[in-house]
Amino acid sequence: MQPIRILQVVTIMNCGGLETMLMNYYRKIDRTHIQFDFLVHRDEEGHYDKEITELGGRIFRMPPIKPGNYRLYFNKLDKFFEEHTEYKVVHSHINENSSFVLRAAKKHGVPGRIAHSHLSDLGIDLKLPFRLYARYYLRDAPNDYFACSKKAGQWLFGKNSREIEKVKVLNNAVNVEEFKYCEKTRARIRKDLDAKDQLVIGHIGRFNKQKNHDFLIEIFKEIQQKKPDAILVLIGDGNLRKDIEKKVAILGLSSKVRFLGIRNNISELMQGMDLFLFPSLFEGLPVVLVEAQAAGLKCVVSEAITKESDVTGRVEFLSLYQTAKEWAEKVLSSTYEHENTAELLKKHGYDTSSMAYWLTEYYTNYYVSKIN
Image (cartoon, rainbow, N blue to C red):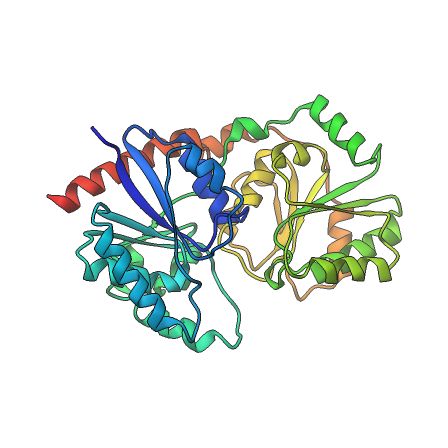
């Protein structure tokens, strides 16, 4: 018997939060029963594309969704679903733009249509009218609703809508065992960072407005005033990286800030950190924050992040209205030991081993119910 093929709809399979979450589940699901294929919205190859094909998945490419190419995009969607009648379940992860994909899927008779919210805000910019338009048309496109947190579900589906009662929170689970603290790994990573006995503060995220790197550097500047040998490790890449590198140089912090780019050994790098700093402007429930807790790190994060993210009691929330100095004081007054949080994360459903079994069963039952 051939596995059930689920179409996962994303922007591009790079090292972002939702993409990492999807891969965490994809690696662990029973692929003799469930297989993932991916509809992506970029021509360039994504970070995970090679691994996807090695695991048996297929990748289909669509043009970016943007004002001005809606007609072209809708035509390509129609053609895709005309040619690929094998999909009975489409799981879309592109927030309000899921409305376009799921409406096309509905038009072509796809019975299972899942909208999945991964954010709790997008801010205000020139795209806001188009986002509101897309969200309006989301109303009758899905017949099932997922979110990474209750807050993310309310943001996309509405606080008072009938849909919010149907939202299933699918935890951004991680491979807990992979993040268990190891003294040998810590020593090796700190040697690579040339850290010795210094305070190592870590951050992982794309260099974009959402992650608030400007403020992060301001906080680190204040930390340097009190602890001149402290080190800041920045993992990730993005369109604002050069601006942040320039700011770091202007502030005279270049020798203390490590720009590591995109890395595959996140679980090891977290062993070398003493604290995780995350002042994002908005998030859903970030996978990287679950990973930091799995590594046993103390985390200082913004109040814009849902309180649901504190699974282990290791997360401190601060307002973005507080000054960089106040944030620095919180970091410097924290404890830095790594705690064993594995059992807590497993208990609350944040381990992929157990949650992948649930997702396999869910897709299987959902598929059977929708085609019968």
